[in-house]
Amino acid sequence: MMASKEDEFASMERVRFEGESCIYTEEVDGNEVGVVQAAKPLTPENPYFEIEIENGGTMSWIGMGIASKGYDGDKQPGWAVASAGYHADDGCFYKAPRMDDRNSDGKPFPMPLTGEPYPCLEKGDKMGCGVEFQSYGKDASNSPMKVFFTKNGMYLGGVFLERQFDEAMYPTVGFNSVGARAKIDLNPPVTLRRQAEIQHAAQSFGTNTAAIDIVKDCVADGADVNIRDAAGRSPLHMACAYGATPIAELLLEKGADPDVQDNMGLTPLHMASGYVRPATAKILVENGADPDLRTQRNERALDLIRNLRNATKETSMGGLVKDKRYPVMTEIVDILERITENPDEWIVPEPVKLDEKTEEGIKEAMENAKNMVEEMKKDPEKMKELEQAMELMKDPEFQKKVKEYAKDPEGMKKLMEEYKDKINL
Image (tube, rainbow, N blue to C red):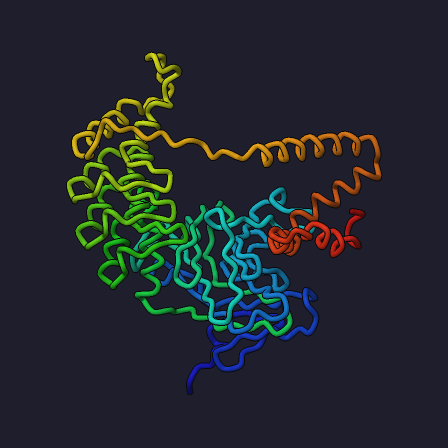
């Protein structure tokens, strides 16, 4: 007899399966969260799973991530202790190991992944979650160290897990909007999983002794060594930033592009220079990295390390050195000066300049805000309004509205009108 989809899951609350699709069964938005949790935890052999959004429902409130066994059936992943989640509606990451990490509603604060949220609002969007374990291999322990997430196979970043996560972690998915449905794949293709793992492992060198072995296995299983993450960075970028010279050597040997540029124009050589990694910089140079490629700020790797080294001195006249890495910075400067086309050129990017009108407007707004707060402190009712406003600013829906209206000349007026019932604006 063929096993049903339900057999893969140990608990289900307010959800049901129709073939491969998991569906939220409640008929009121935000009424109660529907949660489904896998019967087996993630392991070093199977550390990654994905869901595919088929319908976000009325509000796109779908969350996925990891949680301890028997997780609360009325909370999205990441809302309760020993859980972490990535949510489709706001594209943010949630993790709540301690009570003081939560807002007044008892929920953790949203944290954008890699500094920017990545919502999954389109049909077919895929959300992935993986765990890095303390050891690796068939008989490894199940003690998790980090959790990481992906959107449509694109690596979004990872974070350390506290001691509350020392137990086994189970794939967990939450639904909270009418009509929400998703396919849950607890065993995605090996190549797909390896694409996520290679991006994460390249920056885990130093904290995980198995990182080099993971990268080797990822390459052997067909992972693309030039895959790019949300910031446009390849595994080689991250290996160079973290000084993972053995991983950088392996990636270069397997065809990694030493001159790939990220969203800001940074190359792996820029990363090795900016993070002061002389051994990695030398390996890149030996493998033909172009030292004359420039960032969006017009900096070559030589400019970047010179500017960094120059900033470590108290004065430009040879004063006390503030950064003990000064000699190592000089080592990188020497390497790059020998191969850069015009070493005498020195680009020092100017800080972004605001036009006079914008600068005056910012100063005026800051002064007005300061005066308003001082006035409110004198009036308990006004202070209450301020507290309400501060709480509203944490609301993901409000944050989305702010972005929607940002380019609309009448945006502030519309925003105030829409939220007038929530706060006395």
